[in-house]
Length: 148
Image (cartoon, rainbow, N blue to C red; front, side):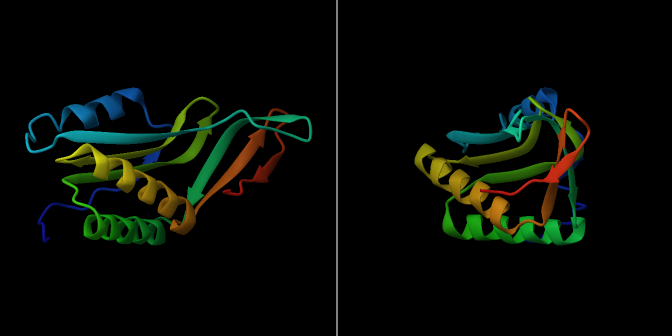
């Protein structure tokens, strides 16, 4: 599919707000061939390691490479599943515990495909996108996040 629209970035500076998420959902109400939406919201946890609690994650990325990864992941999902819409947003910069850092939103005519597509997408993003998280502890030390 070719479009003349400028390419939007998948990255958002800081946490992804509930207003942004709500507005994204509301924009799809006019698309009346959609029968189901699924969203995944990744939230920063207050994990504890070696007696220290995580208070935030500072996300960084090779943005051009990550955007290419997101594009490839989207294309694979559209080829594999009957989707109407698919959106991926990831935070850059500091996101505090309890805040949202990943928002994946899929829409389709039928609900079952949205469940399958969403799981495929989240796992592919975690595996393939060059995004890095520095977990910041309450004592201001840090460690690099490892995806499990």
